[in-house]
Image 1 (cartoon, rainbow, N blue to C red):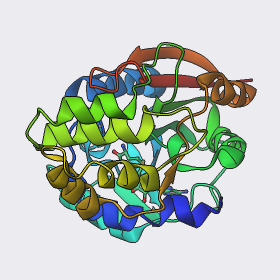
Image 2 (cartoon, protein in one colour):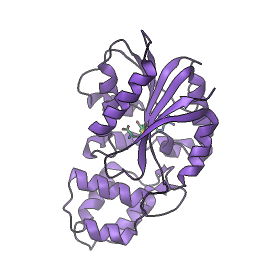
Image 3 (tube, rainbow, N blue to C red):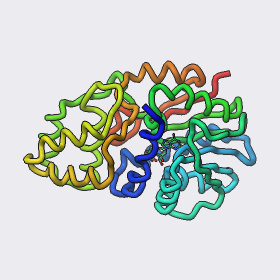
Image 4 (spheres, rainbow, N blue to C red):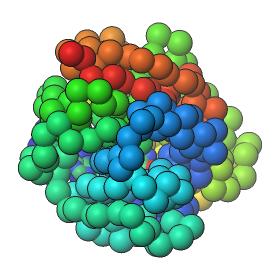
Length: 273
Ligand SMILES: C[S@@+](CC[C@H](N)C(=O)[O-])C[C@H]1O[C@@H](n2cnc3c(N)ncnc32)[C@H](O)[C@@H]1O
């Protein structure tokens, strides 16, 4: 599947980003873990260099607390950078911004102490994962780390029947939090297809519009997401781990604390020598 289909729909999602709650946003716990892994990665460096893939405001707010760190934000959608910047607590001062694709943008080699991302690998197709991890490794110093939340079908990830989720959420009035949980579980954890798409989420909701609250959940979905948006979620974690371990060793990992907890970990990946 082409790169465009994965990345371009983020122009619309970015606009509606504040309508989604933690889970899609890293939680305060996730940010604490990001900070702990950052400290490991930059220890002993006077002017650490950090590359952020994507424009996640919570990670940039955390990085902005350390003015000695030089941050570069790389996102293919200028619209996403603008929207995410407006969601930051303070305007970034120590940050450069670049518009470009993680898979193609020319990156300097052996430069960064840490590369950060939040659920980046789910945003490129499985066929492009090797390129993503190889390019990140090439941009990192030999002592560097990739620090990122990864969502996948881990051995303990619960897969729900779609009807079970629809029945459960028909009893829960839509709010930012209930919508975020319902939408993510329905889209990513109600099947074992190798790719998750908004098409099947729209179809499932359309087939249940007569069920209590489903019209509202449907309207919220249509406000934020377009049809035809794929995510690389649905394959067993072992498939991605095999690719990661070509370039990185898993130095540390910690479980997410949101409804994603059985499907998401924050990883600290050390460059393989
Ligand atoms: C990092 S991801 C996942 C969302 C994440 N949980 C967050 O908090 O931002 C979303 C961002 O990645 C960007 N993006 C997706 N695919 C990309 C690619 N191939 N190259 C550069 N940016 C990309 C999107 O424009 C969007 O801003």
